[in-house]
Amino acid sequence: MAPVLASLRRSVRRKLGFYPRWLEWILPHGSMQVREDCWRAEPDYDDAWVHACAAHARIVFDVGANVGYDALLILDSPGVEHIVLVDPNPAALALAAEHLIRNRLSAKARFVSGLVAAVAGETRSFWTVGAGAAGSVYRTHARTASRRQASLQVPTITIDSLCDTLGLVPDFIKVDVEGAESEVLGGAERCAQHGQTRWLVEMHSNLELPMRDNAARVLAWCASHGLTAWYLKQHTALRDPDDVAHRGRCHLLLQPAPWPYPEWLRGIPQKSVLPTSFP
Image (cartoon, rainbow, N blue to C red; front, side, top):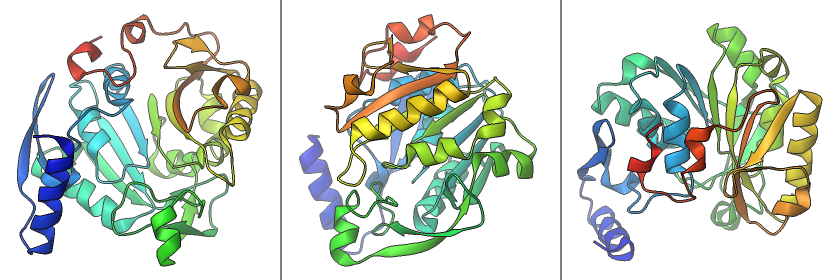
């Protein structure tokens, strides 16, 4: 079914008060049950990259987990032993928990409701509507929420505080936080010092923080922590923020500078179908 028609049908079912249907999602190592209203009919830019990175990880932090779509991708990899799903939106995180429980994967998971930032223990506004995926600390990024004056007051946590509280150091961190990427990295000082984490960061641009400025902040953080940033669309090292300044959204792979670019990523183009994500 075409994505537009599928979206229309889901909207009609919601308005009529029907419960969402559960669909079978065929993945490289099996299948998952996914709520129809959380389903993406076509692969996103980074689905295959996320899946491939998970195949080389045991402990994963999913920062900006939303309804758990990426968590299911990650847990399709048999080697993943533990995943921590973090999201500032309790409604979205509850759906993520429902997905993992439905697929009998919750024993591998922990769920943390909080806003990952550079400093823990503060309270920040998070602009969002319902369980929507476009919620952000940047009001101009979350346009629907901004128009409706819809925000949550959310306590902040950091990657480092998560590592300390849970006693974990992740092999892989997926970051999708709608513009606040550099803030997440700013709270990962000790995590970066371990030199064992690979990051897949979805970069965003908005009126308050254009892509060039956002990328410059991320590159500065990488330089100060001995990491290299790789532009995944081109599979090349990113040295100059001007190279991605034109993008509204793009993806970077961050990893310790001594590590070579993964050969198992080179054959995976942007928006690739999942079978090509086999290592």
